[in-house]
Length: 319
Length: 180
Image 1 (tube, rainbow over the protein chains, first blue to last red):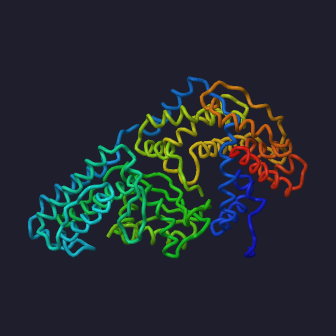
Image 2 (cartoon, each protein chain N blue to C red):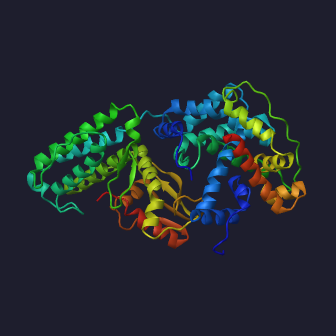
Image 3 (spheres, rainbow over the protein chains, first blue to last red):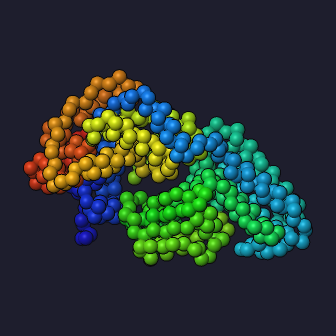
């Protein structure tokens, strides 16, 4: 492809999904680095999205009940609120910390040198969200005794949950800096998923100190964590220099929270699947947190793309 | 590509992920006539259009995370899924893929429906109706019959380059009409 090639006349067919898969891949790859073509695609997509309206026609009234019943049969309704997952993990970790004797607080909890330092770290990450939510958080001085660290963390987490539960919704759209190695801002609603995620992972860290087995958080939280992470991964792949524009992974997650997801390997492109990775959803989430070094995943297809995806996925934790 | 997701779409997606069946009912009430209309126009069969409508909303409910409000509107995404289902159905039905019968395009029907009652929907029907005949046929063949631009060219007996140009220009004209 020459440097001055533009997708040009193909763009209308591309937006209408009326070109060959190979042409669609070429256009997507090109538009990823060409603001002119990306801009025209965005411009043409809007009228294309409206086209179907011209033939809109009300279905028979009986279809409504049939569709809703079929949907509920495929996936039961639940009334999980945004804070339920976080609240459950805070309660879990709070209980575990209550069982820790003073000497156990000093034991290492990898990658942190002690449980106390782990909890200071968690307090700091929670503080990013608490501050964005308008809470006035009390400072936690360095070297505070374990009981103080425990109390400060619990109070801050409790105040955050209460604040979110009473919000009118606009607060949830407020941008927040996420915890983690890269500077990324996302809406507060997504930061709450990350709070639940990190609190679950650290609860499991403490369970290890207490020689307790790991405990999965349940299907819906796992699915929410996967959604949260897959949204960030294309940019993370690009930042790590391991993006594959126009390519995607068919991520087949098994067990609770599982399902088939298409994971693009670069930001902002339509993608063709080049590899398939299959592993349990709970293992994938622990991999995201950097708690699984060599997942027992079944990989088929482009091994380089799959390897890059798993390597960058393993850097999505908050440590 | 889009930078400003529609707030209703973001809210509905969150609700669907959280398992709120009120959000599913709201999505159905808002968009079912659009999905059903596309499916009916593509298949010409009421029962098949109902089946496709059901499949589309069950997919939205079971896989809401697949809809990305940053890249498309919910309306556009549902149309896309309905079209893909319709195209699958057409391909299963058409055993001889090389022969495409160009069906006459019926005029859009007047339907009393809250979606169609909106000024925007009337505007779209008007914009489609006002496209030059050559452009309208090309874009409707691609959209509702699921033809590639090469197949559009074959069906209309025009060069492929002309078919590509008509599709692009038709969308431009629609866009200009809709933003005017």
